[in-house]
Length: 459
Ligand code: HEM
Image 1 (cartoon, rainbow, N blue to C red):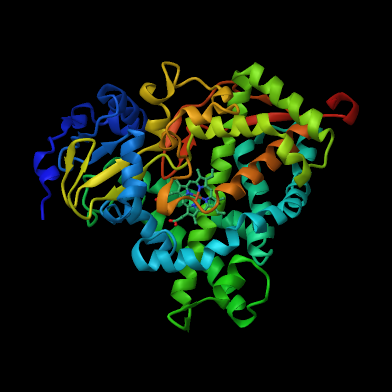
Image 2: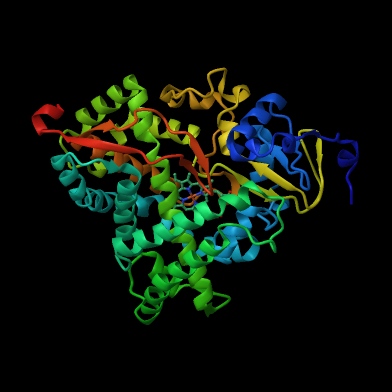
């Protein structure tokens, strides 16, 4: 039943985004910031022609959707993002309702801070071991694509601690290549949300082939884990031992959670870290301070868990990196029932678009220089001055990212390992434009050459 508050609530302003199509869709991320700034954080509707999702940018409204009234805002499957995700990962941790809750209960113990903290040195060794190729590239003066090198480092760390090396790095990289194809093949659907699902779109066939490729690698590994569950605390052993309603998981349930875990553990992490190098190349004072901290704390390495608490500036740089380049740039939801957000009436069934990217770059919440890279925003004491929901690269509320703590440690390890060993010269020393796909990617590859630091030069 409609509440008196809902009856009294106003209609939102509709911004006719379709008038600016296709540039508004190509630069969807920037359009969201522009619309958010123009509305000064009020809830508005994005007039896309056939559909008109609500854009929610104000931290108070974000909090209402993700936390206070989260039950009214499931992920739904009326948005291109969640439909595409669902076609890849099925019904596991990235879904909604009871299925999601059961998956979250099964997987959450893997992410307990005490467990993650105990894995840091193992991750550090895996990362260090995977830098061999970079040593070679530095010796030969070869140009490297830092995005793909980072994906190798992330895979080495994650496959060791989360998959107990049941998947080797090459298999993980093949999965990531297939995911790459999925993430980019989703772009036409994300950018043309008005096209119905039964209309074939460019990218659909590539999407299907990539899902088959991923299943072809993962299903044999999964069946092996079922035959020999093992006692380790890795994802496969956990799923093989788990039960729901007193029954072991079906192969389909295991497959869905496994594919979800592979998808979320690797792609966001390396994409997020790829942005760091162009940012350092264009912000010399930040680079100098970061290098000085790592040289001081870690020296010539190797990096270990004990170093991380003293890498406070490194952490500030990473926090700021995820403010301007949050890999999960868009978080869509569906209104299960009517609601009122900031005095605006939300209709049942409507799509509600939250965007960490937009909120993180809006002047109302981050000041007139919101688009400037400035790690000082995360200096001790400064974060208390902001609304908690003004910064949410890992989501917040009931679906808050399980991997946040893991990513933070892993990212510090990777950056500290690379900076303790090399200096970096970018082929194009500028920050690339953004290409929106399921995650926020650089428009071009980030290429650079490495100079190996001699231990005496590093200090
Ligand atoms: C830079 C790295 C990462 C970013 C930016 C990121 C971002 C996000 C965001 C925005 C969500 C919330 C989605 C929503 O509300 O619908 C999320 C959920 C999730 N993330 Fe991450 N993530 C990152 C890394 C990781 C890692 C390394 C892992 C695992 C090791 C992970 C595991 C998960 C899981 C399992 C969920 C689903 C939680 C749920 O629905 O209950 N993430 N992530």
